[in-house]
Length: 411
Image (cartoon, rainbow, N blue to C red; front, side):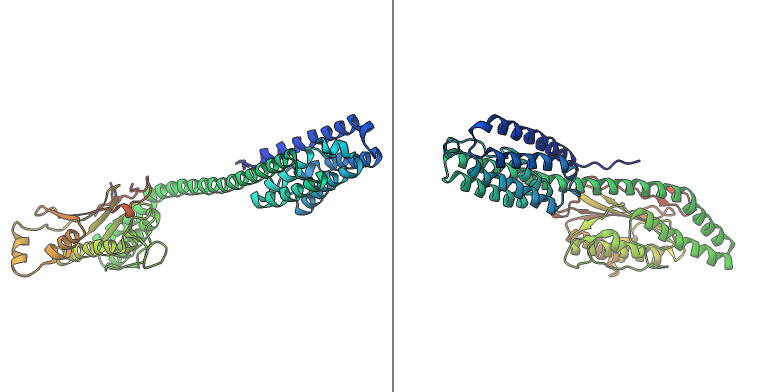
């Protein structure tokens, strides 16, 4: 069972101990100064109230939930009343000599409760009220009085600020732990799905295509479901059912002016015959660069359909490296004959020269094409990252797997 940790709970325990110790100290000071006080009886009544209140409210300073605003207001009122009452019960000579007020340093505990409960703003209000009461009690802003006022004011505000930072850190840690737990669970489910469901769907697709007829339609549907499920477990957005055409998309936050997630732009290409493997985290790029890179991938897939046939399989692999984004498009078609690309350029067909290589060249990247007759074609698109596009460390690894034409997983 997970135990929720609180970074501020030790502060409440320390405050409780402080209040008990300082209440006892205030009682001891009163007993010591009993004979020197001008009106010891009213002072004794106040000290009794102070000690009783401290003991009765032990549970109130156990945590932030039980330390309510009403309690804080009464607690501060008792502290301020004790400070002002000192001018009546004590002698002028003792006050001028710098003797302690009736609540003594117990007052700081009341201010610290404000700081722990509400942060530095609440601490500033409480310490200012105490400071005003001290100045009224002393009659004039002496050196020691000003020193004590500034000390409690600065200390309480500093502690309040530390509490606010601690609470923010606690929330951040809790979110990080939740994300880590969700990621581990997702990875476990992805492994189970990959080892079971995806392989079964791939087998149904393969057997259906081999059997033909109605079984071929069943195989096609199984292939579409496999592609959609693969996008889901890899973190890429699900592709439109049966889609094989290019598409575009907005940034990860839905705005057209922010960085675009390349996975979003490539997801519509995924289908029963096109397998998309991408990192589980966003691959962020400048909007123009992301759109051009996605268009180059679309052009490569168009060449697969045009030259390898509708029955050819293609695989898209996205790799998010620290200094570049690498996209590889591979097919199982017949490959490109030697000299065919040069002949196509001479005939005015500039699909590879302009739609693929030209786009990457304009972006400062490059495209390499490797083709072996009878063994398919592989197009590697490499786009260098700009400093503004760099993703946080640890997001450049791809946990997705490719699936061969016969349904077997490959890396």
